[in-house]
Image (cartoon, rainbow, N blue to C red):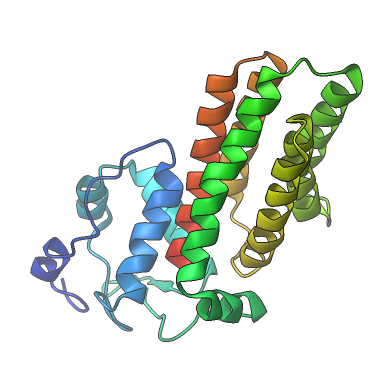
Length: 245
């Protein structure tokens, strides 16, 4: 390299291990962000060449480029053109878009991880229970309508529609206690998601996961509903932990 981080340092970064699971984009964003937030790469350091980094993470170059673009939007990275160009770290303390939710995440500390872990248990359970019930026509129509509303990325109330879908799934479980727990989780998650940039690749991935969850519930398939919701919660948690925690 002509400038920035030397190649041998890039090889030693422990977080650049192969990505596994169904949330390759979200995990890639999280790995890169955590590498920067933990100080393994500092302001002014350069990322390794795209091909090398994609090989180390074992993700496609398309996925890596989209993850880098998301971190540019979040104020972590900057891409420079020309002979001395490349992708450089510009993050120093908090992203340029930081706000109240970032402060809340810092204040929560370990409670942030606890909230995301709690969600990982509660929401998949709610989805599985909803899929095990015989749903009324009203329940089914509500789920279908909420799914469609959550997929409208242009709507100014997109985040609200996303939360409403999760609450509709909880309501379909038939458990008032589960519905209350999901409501508490969604309040926290919504505030945290407001602190990170809107990432179109993540929204498209989320839409596909939402559809699989609702389809499984309507088909009466608890195992698939649980698995799809677990994957969905994992993807959101990866982004939040990488960009905020």
